[in-house]
Length: 123
Figure 1 (cartoon, rainbow, N blue to C red):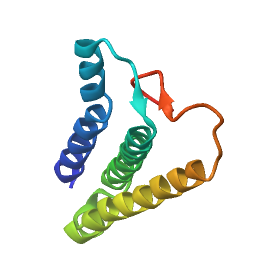
Figure 2: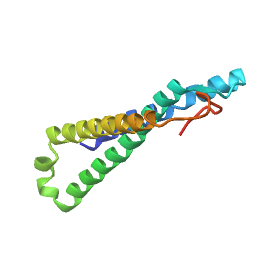
Figure 3: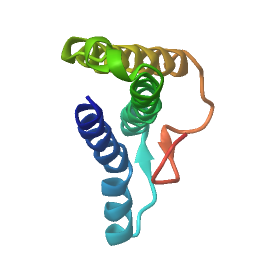
C-alpha cells in the first residue's frame, strides 16, 4: 500500500512542479513577465489541485503508517488494495471539486485592471 501511495505522491509532485516551471522558462527566454487571465486561471486551478492532492496523499500515507504501527496483525485486512484505491480516488475527487470551486469563486470577482498579470505566476 505504501508504494502505491508513494507513486501517486510522486506523480502529484511532478505535476505540481510542472504547473509553474514551463511558464517561468518561457518568461526567462522571452524576457516577458506577462500571463493572460485565462492562463492565470488555468495555472491556479492546477496549482490548487496538486497542492491539495499532496496534502491528502500525505494524510493517507500517515493513516497507512498508523495502521501498520498500532494494528500490525490487522494491517493487511485494513489496508487492502480497495481501500488504497478509494483513498487515492477520494483525494483526486475532493481536490478537483475544491479547485473548481476556488476558480468559480475567483471568476465571479470583478477586476479593474487589464486582464494581463505582470508576473509568471498568479496567486
